[in-house]
Image 1 (spheres, one colour):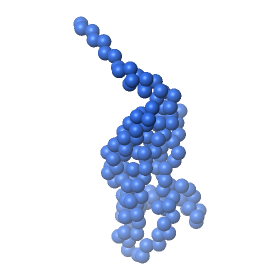
Image 2: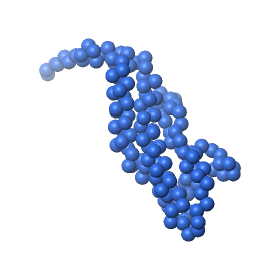
Image 3: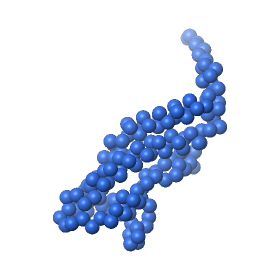
Image 4: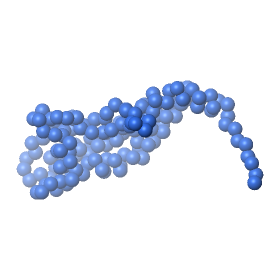
Length: 143
């Protein structure tokens, strides 16, 4: 069997070693860059479905749209960095934004579904990945 010995360029190894101490910081920035893309698409989709196709005049207050946001980046028990998109709670009337979003997404008896989360996820996946790759490269180039 043949054996090959491949060595990485010294400048790349140096950047990689410096990245090690800044991994958490860079991971946060990369996740935030991707999260902002998904958040923008979700807000756009949400705005387009609220009040559309209703049998009665819309009673929207804008509270659901304002409550949509990103969590800070957190590290889970397995050491993975995560950022989540969701709704802040509770509503000013004591209700649940998540409940209203769920009804919009999946519908209920007498109210058809108006999906906005799943389409946003699908439509923004490639753009979010590209934004995260660009941000990662930008951060590595700074080193």
